[in-house]
Image 1 (cartoon, one colour):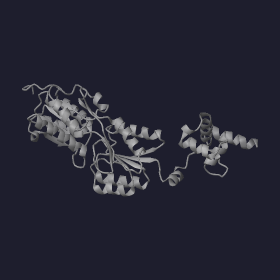
Image 2 (cartoon, rainbow, N blue to C red):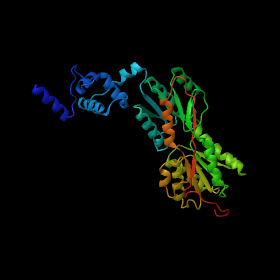
Image 3 (cartoon, helix red, strand yellow):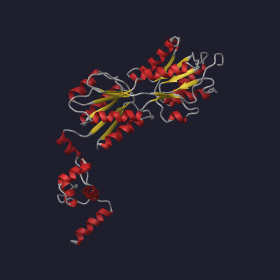
Image 4 (cartoon, rainbow, N blue to C red):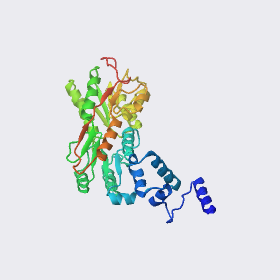
Length: 360
């Protein structure tokens, strides 16, 4: 008897699993026996802890810890026809554009004991479709997707499988799809209006590739609308479409600033490209904003770290992530068809200043 007790103590001390009576991994019944409660009480502690008294909950969780018990989520999912797992498919992990929103999404899921699976597409629509199919095959209860721009066949698949979808970072009025986002066109236009009011007339833009990217297209349209409203021919906008990276932003800016038609304002599709544009201007010996003004979009932390700091559009990333998680968690059989439109704002920093004709 003492030998058995000592082996159990040794197992705890060394971080080993204490074997269950049935052999193999500890079971729910083993935890119940260890905590001297019913299996129903253990289940409530794990799934709805607020329904159990603090004293009982502590005793059960101590037993879970001692036994190194891991719930059988596969069996639970089979019984409930839910996995309590949600997928998030984002265009890139190379920079922090989606990081804050994704973090908030995960935090909101965790409060309800749900799990996030994340995948990245590198802005490749074919890869995104493959990842959507993979997550559906793995039993995801719902999906967070970035933007609305994808083949109709993908939405047909999700409708047929009954998979709820939330589109974020853009606005969508697609039937059966919920959306939590903001008006990219309006946000870009408001920033352009503010910049053009400072006297800029020679405008350039460094954008993401607009094909299969509704956010990039909308931001470009917003700038062109502002130019028209301010008496500037939108066809005069110098546009470079490139991948999102500081290096590509730098290269694009250098190309724009080296020739004889140097813009006084470079508007960028996000803060990553804008940081590169500032570096590109400085590499040519130009002053920002004295010789050329630069604006970004997103207001990620990088916008505060450039010198000068970036004037940019603040996007409510965390609010968007939390709201997206809530829409998926609260989904019921009535379907997904909710629209949450969030406000953006302009953050003024040192990269944008008044242009005096003849000064550059």
